[in-house]
Length: 243
Ligand SMILES: Cc1ncc(COP(=O)(O)O)c(C=O)c1O
Image (cartoon, rainbow, N blue to C red; front, side, top):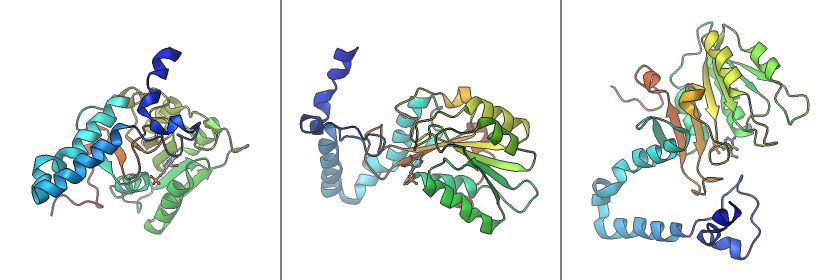
């Protein structure tokens, strides 16, 4: 097994010069990236506007399927967007926070920028409930489950906590949320590529993450999985598709 892993080292030139331990922040650049970027600029340069039809229109869907295969998402259920916050904003735009079921419940160990987004949804009527941790390392699962009630609309949680690598009990959270009629939005940024998981088995409603860390994909691309039966029902107002 170690020998098998060592075979990957030459694929990451920075490893010749550096002990690289920060993939949870920005992954080491794979050798092939240079060639791929060259292909991108070459296509733009030689094909001009025809690059869209040649390759670019379908690229986001193709990359979405490739990313989705890492967590068993059905083909066509993963879209690529710019960052996780935009993915979460797309999900939030499907919901109306003016009804009694308007609670958004999460823990204070979510990524701060994601929490800032949900905090801002108070202006749209969301009642945000942030469940505190005791030690900033572990999520108190029972405390989180107790906060999810019949007035809860959404539970946007981190799969692996960025600060401590604590792995949340997603099964228990999905079970409680679905029992009371709430949706679970799983932020798997720190899980994809480090922890095997299956969105269909976990039965999460949405899943988001990005590719720049342990997937070594560089900045600028994030993914949004939507449970296929929900995708046909929900309409994001962020991207109106029907006029
Ligand atoms: C768990 C988690 N969610 C989200 C993000 C980043 O979100 P965004 O793509 O909106 O910058 C990170 C990056 O550190 C993260 O670790």
